[in-house]
Structure formats: C-alpha cells, structure tokens
Length: 231
Image (cartoon, rainbow, N blue to C red):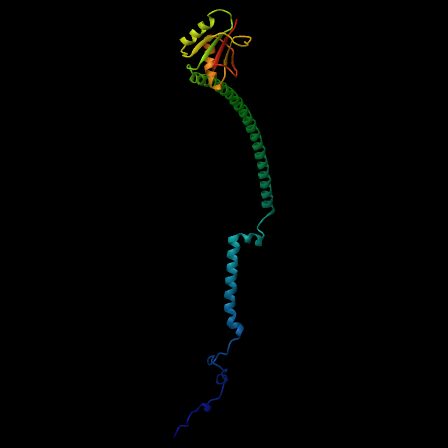
C-alpha cells in the first residue's frame, strides 16, 4: 500500500506560520527608533555629567553648588581682614615715625655737613688769598727789571743825599741810576713814581730797597722811574 505524500498544507497552521515582514529574523519584530538610539543618548549624558563634575571639583565650584560654605568661615575671613587692616595701619604709623626720625637725623647731618663745608670753604678761601698774594709777589719779583732807568731827585736840601741813595740802588743791582736836583713842583712826601704799568714791579722793588712806602703811577716823567726824596 502506497503512502500518501506529506506536504506543507498537510499540517495545521499555527502562530509560527505568520512571521513579521522585514529582515528581523523569523520570530522577532523591528524595534522602535527611540529604543535603538537610547544607548547613545545615555552615553552622551553620562559623559557630560562626568565632565561637569570634574570641572566643578577642579575649580572649587562644587562647594557653592552643594552649599558647603558656612557663615562661620565668612566671619573668620572678615575677622582676618580686619586684623590685616589694623596690622597695615600699625605698620604705616610705625613707618611714618621712622621716616620722621630719619628726616630729623638727615636734617641734623645736613646741618653738620653744611657747617663743616662752610668752615672748609672759609679755610680754602683764606688759603686761596694767601696763595694769590704769594703768586702776586712772585710775579712782581719775576718782572723786576733792574736795567730800567731810575732817577733819584734830592728835594731835602742836603747836599749829596740823592747820590747816596743812588749808590744804594746800584749796590742792589740797578745799572742805570742817576742823581738829580728838582726842576719842578715836588710832592708833599717822599715817593717813588713810575710811568708805565710794566714798571710797577720795578718801582715797588726800588721803594722796598730805599725803605719808601709810597708808590704812585704818574704820567709825563723824564725817566721810567723817579724817586723824590723829601724831609
């Protein structure tokens, strides 16, 4: 006896014989869009939260977010600020006192220095004057010309008195000396006259040699240097 041929239609259909459409497997339907993108959204949110937490911790802002600062710390900070201000004020007062003291000391030192400088300047001025006088005397000595013509006029009335003074000058080194009698008006006292400024040093040397104190410059002399002898 031949067996009947078994086909698909020979079995009774059940729920597995009506699968969903699309490439989702034989027994699984397609998932919604939100279900498929939900893992990505979760990963992004978690990463953002981690980054924000790291920033808040590193910058210290987490204390403000969690209200960890207490009024006591604020009060302590205020007290510290006041103490610092008082300290700065005391330091400033101390600095002012020190500055005043230093200024007084500086003024005193400056006064002493000024006095010392004034004394030193006076001493230097005196030394300079002495040096100037010495230099002047040396210059006069250096410019004395004993070859200059010297005329000795006898106004005393004593015969031979002018010749005696002429001999004194010749002994002192003068080489052009003559004795003469007065020919015009005479001065009131014994004097040495010179005509040119270049003969001043020589006239002064003649006066010193003869012991005469008066030395004057006069124009119109018959000799560069004229000695007038009076009683």
